[in-house]
Image 1 (cartoon, rainbow, N blue to C red):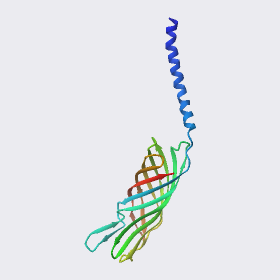
Image 2 (image 1 turned 30 degrees about the vertical axis):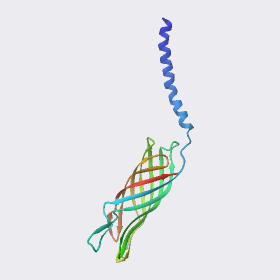
Image 3 (image 1 turned 135 degrees about the vertical axis):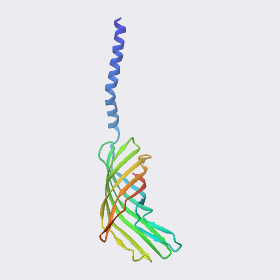
Length: 202
């Protein structure tokens, strides 16, 4: 009777020991992994502005809007805030470009964004970030028949929110939203945009 009564007690005691040792085992596994490091970060961005910067009407009556397609290339670094890299700060600098071509002239938009964003990595495949963006020297330049269309906007601060799916530690893709207002000659306009990004981390 004593042997039979002691067996459940031993089983319960063994189970409790296993449960109590599980956090220690998990902690030992995490500490054995190499700590997160500073990485090169870069992305290729393609965006669409909700409000176009300028409208161009061609000889055949068709129209195009400057800002419908905006291409950007950015590079910088990602700095881990925690050992496992779950929380990070990322700094990117690059250029953003849009252009309309015609036989008798061109119209283009150019700016140099600098963004500093805070990020959290979830479930090893989802990355969410947000932060301020400094838009340096936004400008419109015209050539040919559009040569009198030059506009210099003031350097301004906006914001960006980005959600990425990480394919692995190196590549990712996602969507971002940029809030931005541009001002020139005493007037301002909403130049916010939405777009997609292809990201590289090394």
